[in-house]
Length: 456
Image 1 (spheres, rainbow, N blue to C red):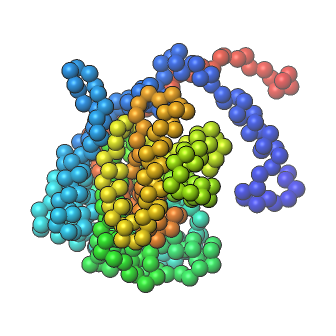
Image 2: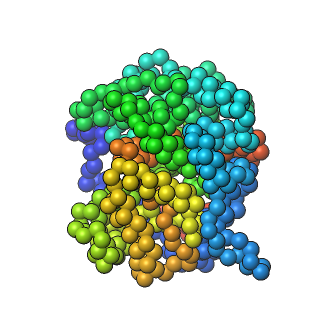
């Protein structure tokens, strides 16, 4: 019997000792992966993903066939066949918000006409409400310092309020998906306000969503005490949400959605699993890491125009001597893109405009310098098999900081956008699936003779 009650998170010397045993008995010789031609991370040596499925939701292009050879090219991204750059351009030329329109495109496979878009926006407003007392009983009752966990808990709890939670028919899953897309801004912002009030002793603000507002406007108005924002701020956030909505079936969280959906589970469990994936610093959590990395750079490099000092700092990061000592320059490189990430190219221009309007030119210049220097440093320090370019996470943190959005909800904002893509992929899996996704793992265990307990 344990002689005293320990705190839930307390560790013990016994656990530390057992953890060493876990580590020592779990190491697999890295040469075996080569010997058995194992695709680590489901990727080839050049970074190309192993083909595990088909999708009609989005297309990622990173190379083109030139004289029979695949040659890296400027990255391209298509939503349901439409180039993302053309989508953003069209929305900007009309000077309107586009998030809801692109959600429609991803879910239904075609661009809406004016009436269809109006009706769909009305549907989103209709579903943008949480069950009675949900905020009080779920979000405020047990606030978390981790907003992604807060959202996941809320999503799983919404299962209990659904009269048909386990119904996986297309019409029911579509209803559940539209509901979740609608309430994710509420779950994100209310979760943050609960944390800010109960764990940081700040004032509590729980505003109601204005039905006339776009999703981007709702986020800013719910987040800020005075509910005020500029049109430029809302339009830039709207664009960022569109860029984060979808990125093929192979990214970790979307693949998770396919895998979990293939088991026949409910929508809430599938989305909670996707949230758990996106939380990771190698996936959606990378935008927070970029922001924190730059804050550490600012603290350690006094002259932000000194390329040599910045390059030296980046080398220390790669040598695991600076920042989080993980050896990663966050925001640089991508599993798919080699020359450029089209989302980053679009986002960078808007970030620059906002920086000029808000007086962040010095910070933007620093980001540009790191963007230019990092590939040089990485190329010198590491053996790489493909190009290294900045990805969409690189400028996201700067954008959110200029919008006075707290870093705690950087990744939740990613989820607020990506829930649209997850929903589209879940529906696609349900329509076309049938087999549970089960990749193979080769066992390298040696057979052992059982020894009775008294003889060990």
